[in-house]
Image 1 (tube, rainbow, N blue to C red):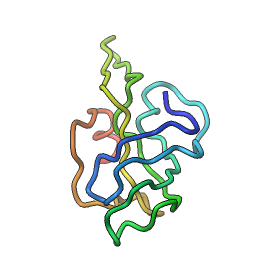
Image 2 (image 1 turned 135 degrees about the vertical axis):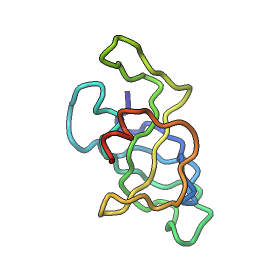
Image 3 (image 1 turned 120 degrees about the vertical axis):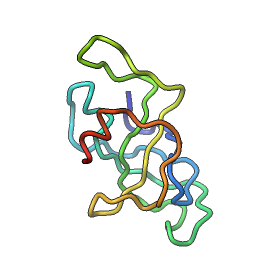
Length: 111
């Protein structure tokens, strides 16, 4: 479960390595929505000038959670770590590529 001060890996090529959740937007929601919620992330260790500076506050979409996502058939999809993709104000990814697996539910929500 992602909450305030949770450290997340960045799963795109925006230049940031890790982000820290400083605010959860959208309140409480069913388990499947935990993957889709937008979180504000604070950058740590940015290596790219296009992505911004360390300490910049950005929005991010959670793509993988260690807590897991329950599917309608009863199966549970769980990952080793928590990961997010940084997005701009128009909810478009800052990076051009996303690394690692992304759940089917998240892909269906974005199409």
